[in-house]
Length: 346
Image 1: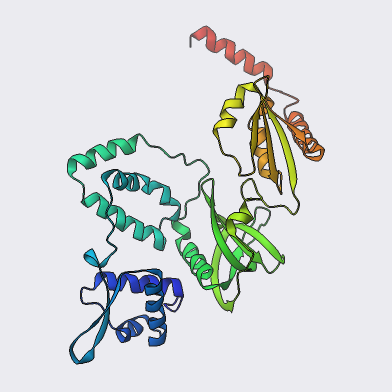
Image 2 (image 1 turned 30 degrees about the vertical axis):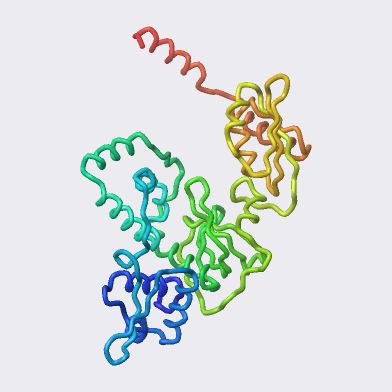
């Protein structure tokens, strides 16, 4: 990917100006990045507008150079010890972005926090880290997808249409798609791309793990004025999206009532404790696929009350599961084995 991509180019400019004590001229930056001086001036103007501590210095013969001001040519940000510890301990939660531009920069920041702590403090911190564990069941590993993630982030930033090869769950071979990437979503350990699909003429969600490649094109698109990623995702229980809107009511038995009350499962949720200590829950969603899986995890302790169509969907799912377990051909052998084990001592 060339340096003319705005996100990469601007990131490299910041990195250059942070590393060079004497700064750099517009001409030097333009030459190193292979873009016009006009483009560099526009980037510098953007940095100034958003508040980066940028300084222009005039040297001998009127030579103008730019540098990042502040301590060590960075932002003058000072953390309290608990803030620094919290950031360092939280580094593992960025691991899904391993290998990307964001991950590399975050790692450097973590190393600086580490270098500022004494050996005793680091020892204490590592012991504390051992007591914080993040489950990784079903999480994606994006070390091999770093280039794809970077290219998608660039395309999102620049508003570039992307040509990708994608292998869905039903596909035996990857299929080429043209998409307009709107944003990335991190859900249950996996990264998803929310994009307008030219093939489907609508917004679709693509799992990064299933992308074979992704190449930004020269074609530009404009993000719809009324599109907000957070608002868009609020209609789903995870990443699945439907076309309608369903009002879902579920009764959770007293045995799991407290657990349900402790969580924020969806922004539309309404939970109300009943006289028998059960919990009545209401959700407003566009699709039932993911909430169905969630409710099945509660087994007999969750009952869908409304709508009737979703109640029937749950009934059919359970009926199919019962059919799978209707016959137990090895039941007798299993019982015999259990009795033998008990006889030998447990």
